[in-house]
Length: 166
Image (cartoon, rainbow, N blue to C red; front, side, top):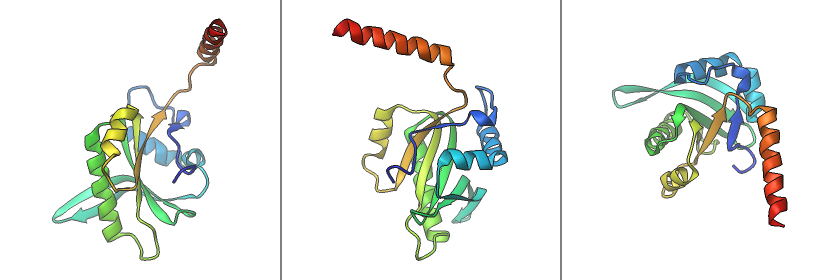
């Protein structure tokens, strides 16, 4: 999986306001699918949105589903517009199991899950994923790039700090 998935995705092309809901994020990603596929990288093909799985007598909807040609597996994206919470992972693991039991073909590898959150704390993510066997990861997304001037200022401050230590 290393090298295929990013730790952070830049979704500036969606034009979303800072405060937005999951349905807005999902609609914008589907409306800008070509751009999103470019951001994801090579090998992804789109399967669908609001992909339904039935478990028992209940229907559940996964936000976005892709197939990765090189990995030969489905890739399920669950979208969260807030911080990563450990409970999000339980929901994703449930979807991965349902997809593998209901939609995965015999020649395909197990489904990989990506929780795409507005932000994450790496320690919380590591703890939440430490005992799981589910192939899943947590990535962040940004809807705006850091302004160039602020980036220059921070780089200048960092350079001055390093020179002061030397």
